[in-house]
Image (cartoon, rainbow, N blue to C red; front, side):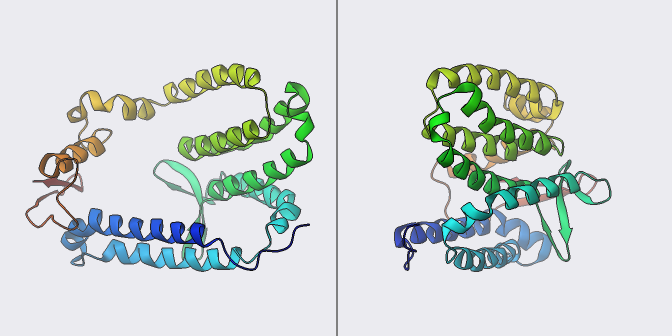
Length: 268
């Protein structure tokens, strides 16, 4: 076992903090106008984001002190717990439905999303498995199939919520890990074709996913639904161009609140 690192990787730490700060600034810039109009406090959403960012930083400071070999030792237990949580979240009356997906569990005043924990657990477990079975990874039957089977089981449970975005990120990350571990490109070629067919089938199976992809053709056909985000993008690019108007420069925006739809439009 290698010697425990006593000092953090300052480049990685600085980059993480920098991205966090940029994210907070973007949240304020994107929400200030609506927060001021709706809550009479332009920092309403920014303060909420800052609170959760603070919780995240504290968690990061704690976890970064844990020897990464600890995650290797407990990876099997962690992934089992995550699978149990994925089952619990699917139970009606227990899992919370948000955005059309039953993917949240309420814990007091907070709520957690088990699929997000599964992404991290799968990375830790797969890293352990691949390091212990590196010679087998070149074999389709004894290396690639066992590696991907567990990933696809987790993906299937996440799709039962359904949450295609989270599932796709997890699968994509794991596929890259398996490829870096030494899997054959020829195996990935066949899997890539099968994966593409499956991905298209998943999109075609849900009309709202198709609308998200095709809404750019005529966003005004459903301005309050699938075309909403694209229309807002057009409003943003219209006055600001590619470089934008600048941080917080939305004073001249005219708000029209459609009470019967409870939808906000930003007109410049």
